[in-house]
Length: 200
Image 1 (cartoon, rainbow, N blue to C red):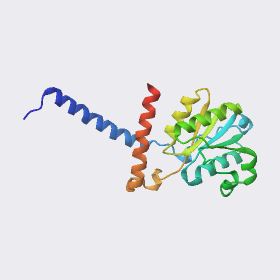
Image 2 (cartoon, rainbow, N blue to C red; image 1 turned 180 degrees about the horizontal axis):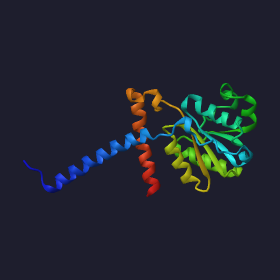
Image 3 (cartoon, one colour; image 1 turned 90 degrees about the vertical axis):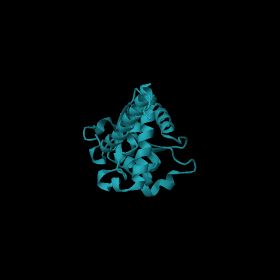
Image 4 (cartoon, helix red, strand yellow; image 1 turned 60 degrees about the vertical axis):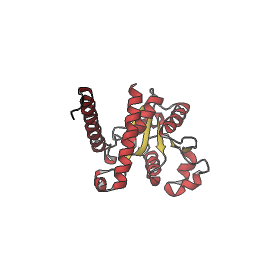
């Protein structure tokens, strides 16, 4: 039995949409920012007072370590760790960095529970401290979505993404790992939603 013309068109449109969705996923995965390509070389340490370092929690502590390392290099004035457990203290984070640096130059953001929440918490902190640039530290797969959210929340602030290597990095061989596929597909779909929302 031959399908009506309208049904055939609907099926064709659905098939094309699916192909575009799949192709988009592979483009997303292939173009994720690499940890060794962070655009930090041109940053002038003399202007560090204009920059705040924003670290989004997760990543087994590697994100926090990277954020503290950036501060140690003199690339930012202070560090915000956004989305920490409200019961977490700076002493709990001592194994990840210099306790003196944690005590003097790190603020803990205990309110965010989502990437959108991270963006709002970070925006408020950046504005409160008068920073014009944010060094945004998070996992490579998460950075595109987190960057969009922060730029939407604080369009007046320049955002420089600092990706932290994860299971999605090419050298990790993610294509052979089901857990990595699940992580990337989920993040890709969330990214599409945020991207569409920002366009609309």
